[in-house]
Length: 202
Image (cartoon, rainbow, N blue to C red):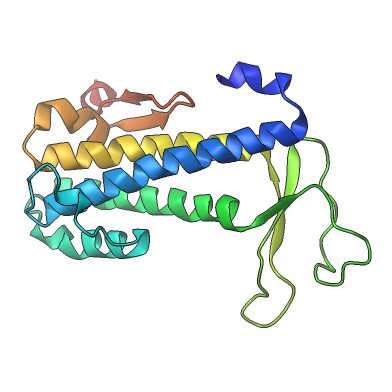
């Protein structure tokens, strides 16, 4: 379904659809990170990424620890930036996957004393399931459907840039240079738009 079709769904179904889209696209991003890690480890065989791939945080940490092995400063900085973008998107994805999304909190719910109800069908309260580190009420915030859609686009962008980093490190520099070094924007349908660094310099 394209974005134009979302208004035809009921408000609860719009949220279900967009959160499912976040999950689907984040699986692709996870796969691209594992493939990049394999290349950075020097494993070029096609199924290397399938060999006991570590959880996301471990994959990110391992990739960052391998960054010094990239000799070129510009390439190393670009790959580091891609890892940062992907990690940010993944952490935000976690909040949609692991937190509660509800439309209101009962007035007598003492667990969330400082939170007010969300406004409008396209807003939800996003709440952690555990108290904060100081033992206080679980963190909660109002999020919009637009924010969730933007996260989908961020995940799509990061997925393509992880693939670009892998391809570039494999030597396919002409093919992947625009996506690794350019300005990339993810699109809801899973594609990307970009302005290459060469175009930006003109």
